[in-house]
Amino acid sequence: MQIFPTSIQFGVLFCALFFTATLKAQSSGQIASLDLPDAPSAQATVQTAPSVSSSQTPTTAVDEKEEKRLKYEQAERELQAQQRQRIAGVLPNFNTVLGGYAAPLSPGQKMRAAFRSAIDPAQFVIAGISAAYGQATDSHSSIDSTGFRHGYEQGGIGFVKRYGASYADQFDGTLLGNGVFPALLHQDARYFRLGEGTIKHRIVYAALTTVRCKGDNGKWQPNASNLLGNLAAGGISNLYYPAADRGFELTIQQGLVVTAEGAIGSFLLEFYPDIQKRFLHRKKQAAPVSTSQTVQP
Image 1 (cartoon, helix red, strand yellow):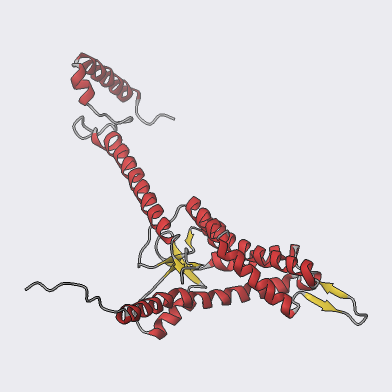
Image 2 (cartoon, rainbow, N blue to C red; image 1 turned 180 degrees about the vertical axis):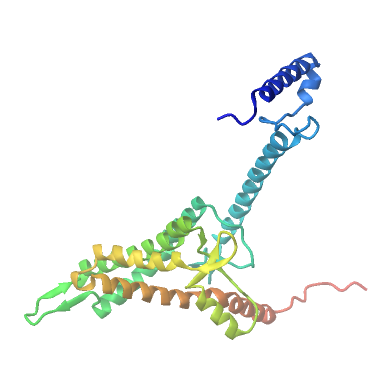
């Protein structure tokens, strides 16, 4: 299908050939300075055609790449600082942003941070405490009318099973809820501490973080990563818990219980710096004042 009449096509072709010959007659410096678009329109002039397509686009791409690199480096510095945070010098507090802002993490950084939290030595200690409590309360075990024990035993074998199940729950929940799902859903699993306002307001804020989180775009959104991570970890637990503790209903129940426990943990993350500050402030006030300084006359 022809758009222009034949005579107009011939005229355009002639002008194009004449224009090409004129360009070849110019010096190499002049040719290098020209910046023509790939497909100039019939109404465009030589002066207005250059600048848009070949000079601004590469510059914009370079600027975006540089901005992305700077954000990644900033996030890496903040992540390294966060992985030195501990509660009482023992419990890992790697997943907390103490300031009001933090650069968004890349998917790789999210997975690395989640894995680092999951294998921290404190997690093994917590799993041991949980297993010991389960051993004392005879968790995941039952005895039928004939006296036969179902589920986990007592003794060393029972403790090992409870320990393995407890640590597997922690590992799966941390890796899925703080790494996999945040990377897939572009969410930030970290706790952004408020640190100001009334106690009531901060309690409500901390509790809500189990159901809402910040996205990589910095906006609040439903915390699907946390809920899906807890439910997925509950589903995986069907592989190693006794038959009596398996099933869809128990998976949902366990996921909701873990989500509620996360709210309690958020209270600690929100208020521990205040407790620490007050304790250290009192400790400094109680410290004796040195009198060894000489007074100059």
